[in-house]
Each structure stands twice: as C-alpha cells, then as structure tokens.
Image (cartoon, rainbow, N blue to C red; front, side):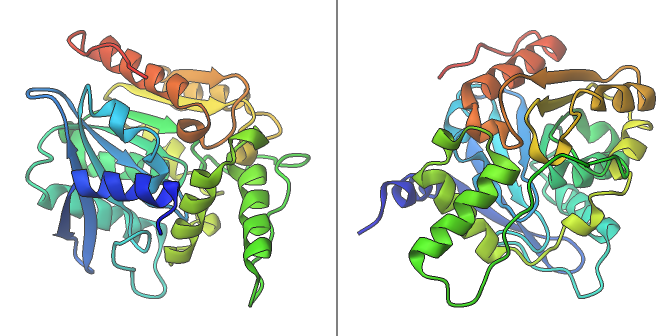
Length: 293
C-alpha cells in the first residue's frame, strides 16, 4: 500500500508530461505541468542532491497562475549522469543545451534553488534573452565566505542502516541543512529526501565555495531577485550580509530576507514562497495574478 506521501508524488507525476531532451553527454528529464493559456512560463530548477521533487508543495499552486516546467539537473533525479571527472561548467553546459533543445521553452522565467542557482545563473549567460527573469533562492557559490559558527555538520550514511536509523539520518540532515522548524520535517519531507539522495550521483558541495553565482549576476541584465531565509543553514551565521555581496555585484538585484525560515523555503513556508513568486511576476509583468493557497 502506498503512503500518503507516495500518493502525493504519484498524483503530480500523473498530471505531468515527461520529456527527455538530448544535452550533449546524454539526456535531461523535464516535466511540464501545464498552466493557464497565454500565461508566463516558469522553469523550476532544484537544489543539490535533489530533483523536481524539491517543488512538491508548490507545483499545484503555481500552475494555477503560470505554465510550470521542472528539470532534473545532470546526475540528479532521473537525468543522466555526467562522465567521471565532471566540472561545474559541464553541468551548466548540459543544462543550457537541454533548454535550447526543448523548443517549448522559447521564453521563460528561471526560479532556482541552492545548487540550481549556480547552474541557472551561469546558463542564463548563454540562454540570454530567452530568460526573462531570474529568482535565486538560497544560492551558494558566492565565494569562500566565513561559515564559522554556522550550520551544524551533516551525518554520514552508514551501510546496512535500519529504517529507524535511516529516518534519523534524514531527519537530522534536513534539520541541519534544509528546514529550520522541526515540526515541518514531516513524512513528505522525509520521503522526498530519501528519494532524492538515493538518486543523487552529482556531488555539488565541492563547488559551493566558488563564485559562479556572483560572477554571473554581475554580467546579467534581466530582472533578478535573490531570496534567503534568515535561518538558511548553508548561509549561516550571517545571512543578512549576503545582501551586500549581491548588490556589489549588481545594484539592480532585488534582495529579500525572509524571517523565520531555513534553506528549503519553498517547502517550509510554501505560502510565503508563492506570494514572493507571484508578487515578483506582477512586478515585472502586471498581468500576472494573485497567489492562492
């Protein structure tokens, strides 16, 4: 028998249209969830060790207002893995080529999370005017900033863990890295974390201290907003200081700091996230509608 979390994921899978797109080294998997006729298109780009499931609590709401696409980045989710010895730029090139080869993505807004911010920001330099705006949520790759006194260390997986040990492993890592409020680490969060980490073959943490995001932001001209939760684990201990880094790179960036929420903002506080996205789209396109919960 399927659990409630498995049913929720299965339902989203059933309403989506899955498309596999050639991207040089192999294929990336995109999903289309539809949306209102003549609405703007959002491409949701997940974070490290993740998949399209990072948006599991957001797709149903956002598709009431926009055409929604998701992607699994190289070596993550259902997409093919890059050859051994891959670099961060290999992931960027594959993502950009995948977007170019998906003809339905002729004009879209990027909404990216964590590792997806690095890939998306760099790819936007290649995709150029096809990308109408960029939203970066909890971006890393902003340099080797001090993390002293910040995020608690993650647990390492051990062989032959019991179900109880596995649940503790995922719950602890979610609390340290992703979700600030322990009450929000529910069965769905644990299920998504288990599925995503089981599929993850691309190791993004080794690229977290480069400057991919800031380097791209400094060169991009489309509307950009950057969002952090003020309890974002990887950005601790001084999340607010990230504002100065982004404004120094590009004074036109809109910077939002959301109180009382961690790294996985879209899951922990979905209503806040939906409001931020819809308000952003209204700001750059007044025809966009109001959020629904």
